[in-house]
Every structure is written in C-alpha cells, then in structure tokens.
Length: 108
Length: 93
Image 1 (tube, rainbow over the protein chains, first blue to last red):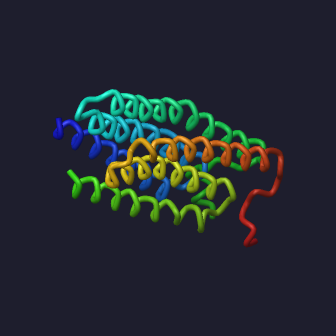
Image 2: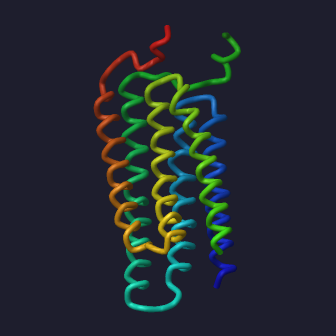
C-alpha cells in the first residue's frame, strides 16, 4: 500500500513542478493562467488522494472519516480553482490586456 | 515514510518560493494574483503533509479546508476589485 502512496504523491509533485515552470516561463498573462489553473488542480488531486490512502490505515471509523474529509477538500478545490481562474481571466479581458503574439514581440 | 513526506514537504516549499517570484516581479497585477493563487493551492497540500508528520491529521484537515476557502475568497475579491479598472499594466512606467 505504501508503493501506491509514493507513486501518487510523486506524480502530484511532478504536476506541481510543471505548473510552477509554466508560471515562470510563459510569455503572457493569459498563457500563464493555463498551467496555473490546470496543473495545480491535477497535482492537488493526486497528492491528496495519496495522503488519504496513507491516512486510511490502520482502519478505524475515525481514520475513514478523516480520509473522507480530505476527499471533500479535493472536491472543493475542483469546484473552486477553475472558478478563480475564470474570474482572473475575466478581469484581464475587461481591463483590456492584449494577448501576446509572436509578431508583436518581433516589432519590439 | 516519515523521511519521504519530509522530502515532499521541502520540495513543495521550494516550488512555493519559485512561484513567489511571479508574485513579486509579475509585470501586471493579475500576474501577481496568479502567483498568489498557485502558492495557496500548494499550501493546502502542505498543511495536510504537516498533519501527517505531526500525527494530528484530524486537526490539520480543518485548517486546510478553511485555507482553501479563504484562498478562493481572496482571489475572487481581488479580481472583482480590478474588474473594470483600466491601466492594469505595470506601475513602473
């Protein structure tokens, strides 16, 4: 059971690392939102699932309820993170930020 | 398993420091908001790992849940504040 936990948590860490590299390296605000919204959600899903499985043993009522609460956090993150991303991009569009393009970069 | 979770927590801390670069030096205000949102979603995971290390998961789960909701409310409020405000470009000009 420990092997499953290690695989899940390391996979989640890989997703988090990819999201961080994307936030640092992408050229534009709109393209930076893509790793920030997607990879963080996927990484927290995998890592939290691994931690819930680790918390499940030894089996008792209390540990099962705690694991269910961890899964509840995952559900809340899945509802909340895309909504926050959409709110940020909506504010950017309303404020009139220009999307990045290769032609414009060459002109500078 | 203790050492493994300690390493995972340290790696998450390093990733949060890297995201903090975008939060400090981001060219627009919304870039800073993206960095802060990424830090918050890593913190919810880090809190549960701290709970596993201290063997008090049932307490730290509640803190993590509250942190997730608070992060969401902060991002929504900030993005509504900058909703129709022009001139979000950098203030260094």
